[in-house]
Length: 183
Image (cartoon, rainbow, N blue to C red; front, side):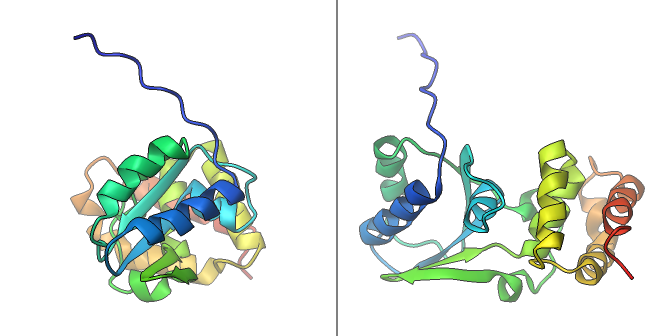
């Protein structure tokens, strides 16, 4: 059998993301937490009108979540990826407490993964859209310049565990972005 090129999924808007939330909560078979990150958070914060992927972290993982995702990704034409900032940069121990509640549906809590970490992960990656997203997070007060700098300082010693990251270059990116926001 030949491998085929996977179908391209459609862009996700707030209505489609809300439908995903309702349906995944209904189809899951137990309590749990879903953290949105990246484009999904930017969409819900009104920073973007659409996104391509819905990046999520499950913690704790709701029973039946993967079965629900398997059917919903096709029915709703979604790209769903298990990805969060801690896959790319070290996470501080308080990331859960710093995550922001979006909504609780049935037994599933939906949260924005810690905005500080989302901003830092985007800055480290450094794509033009990522830097623009970080600037919007600061302009809208979703993250504060001082807390972003403090969080970077807290995770900097642990960057050694991420050999692809140049800590000095990462710090330069943070300083460059924050130069227009700090007093």
